[in-house]
Amino acid sequence: MAIERTLILAKPDAVQRGLVGEIIKRFEARGLKIIGLKLMQITKELAARHYAAHTQKPFYPGLVSFMTSGPVAAMVLEGPKAIDACRKVMGKTFCTDAEPGTIRGDLGVSRGMNLVHGSDGPEAAKKEIELFFKPEELLEYKRAGDAWVLNDEDRA
Ligand code: DAT
Ligand code: MG
Image (cartoon, rainbow, N blue to C red; front, side):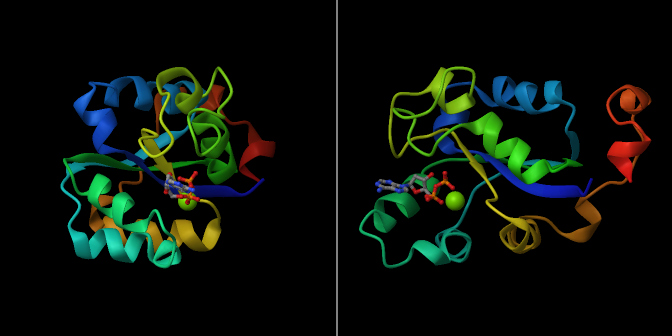
């Protein structure tokens, strides 16, 4: 199974509501490994590059304004099929549609203020990780518990 990396952002609403720990906890509990983590302020330029695919959408100005309205907690997570695994932990885009048991389904009721971002595919993940993290900010290390999270088949 492919070991992937994905970019996750706990968005400004999550930081303001004190939900960063709760959000990280859910990814960590699933077994995903944190290899990069920082609190940062997204600039308009970074938001524009990150959401380049959405430039023409009607919700784009509001999205950029929201994403730059306060600090975010940015992280890179690693694990087998990490991109899809994280999207499942996050739930559907609008909190109103997201299933209970997901971050968006348990913690929010808004459409736009949906607490968390996660890369939606391998190309996006590569681009977004490079946008938010310098190579030296990503750490390779072994966790003591990894032998109980991944077996040889998972790593192959
Ligand atoms: P996701 O964040 O689930 O990957 P997306 O990439 O399609 O969703 O959109 C990026 C963000 O833009 C999303 O988290 C919330 C906002 N958004 C998307 N579609 C929207 C819409 N129709 N109206 C308002 N906000 C929207
Ligand atoms: Mg997206």
